[in-house]
Amino acid sequence: MSVQAIARRRLDPARAEALRAAGSAFAWSRLLVFAVAVVVVAIAGVDAGNERNFDQPALTHPFSGVLDSLLSPLARWDSAWYLDIAHSGYGGQSSAFFPLYPLLVRLVATVSAPGALLVSGYVVSLAALFGALYLMHRLVALELGSSELARGAVLMLALFPGALWLGAPYSESLFLLLSVGAFYAARTGRWAVAGVCAALASATRSAGIVLVVPLVILWWKSRDRRARDLGWIALAPAGLVAYSVYLAASIGDGFAYLHLQAVWFRSFAGPLGAVPDGAVAAWDGLRQILSGQRAHVYFTAAGGDPIGVGWHNLELFGFLLLAIGAVVGVLRRLPVAYGAYVVAALALPLSFPVGPEPLMSLPRFLGVLFPLFMWLALVCRTPRRRAVVFAAFGLGLAVFTARYATWHWVA
Image (tube, rainbow, N blue to C red; front, side, top):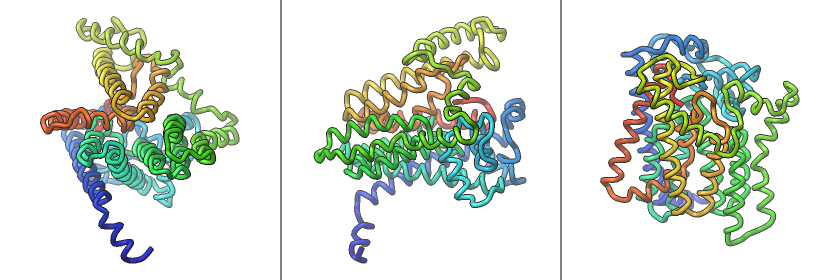
């Protein structure tokens, strides 16, 4: 490529706008999360019981003094699992966590030292988040024909309460990057890239396999529909298959990630079985709260304080109602591939509820479903509507961060 061509590419207004929008959303949202996490832990401390039962201090607190105060507040819950896999490999219940994210953390760190792994975990997550926001801006501008809508969608996703995990040592931001990348590559006719992104996504989370659904739809609706491009789309399950082969060879159970779901009280309840179960749990939660009794009056199997579980089930049901409205909006306002994706992606967790809290982790699952925020940007075209959503999301993100950083379960 000539110097002139490189200069023209660098001056491409669409790329420059996407970089600015992604950089702004990234900076403001992560600054909010980081500041709240550090300050709240410094003032309020943490839930000692949860920290004692679920933390791995050697991995999440590898430094001393200021560095631990800055880096540890976002290394909670599943972060300990991912760091442990990056440090020591798979063993026991860790097989429930897919390998691409901890593998990248280990490769970036280059060594198995806990401090290097923790820093690497943030580097991988934050780099993936920035890349995802950039590609999302390009995709939304391409699909909706408006850089203003693209800016709004990117910022709404970055401020959504479930976006908390996009900057923590979790696999969420990597999955978001790969899923947006698969869509953008398909929409621009680069089917090999789309297939590889989908394969890597299914090595990041089991939900990556559902990317085959929108990719086939995008292929069918493409102008140059070539049969050989279906071969690239067929790569989508490759990551999951490779992980299954590894588990079969190493521990003799190629589907350990499914069998271990019982450890987290997940079980198949029929298609979308978590929806009625979540409604019942929310109703029981409301009755538990109104009863004012901390004994298990309306819960038969709830973890932790019954009043707290009641509030949590009500909160999760609220997210479910928002999700249903957003999914309907996506189906009505966006191309069919986007609606098919969100329906397929949500069908997995909503068919495998958690006993005590059927809708557990729903906000985290919603945080990577970028078509929901494309639709929301369409709905919030006026400055007033956007301001209301930004404020509500920002407040929710701060609350989620404060709870998560102090070792209280969020999602």
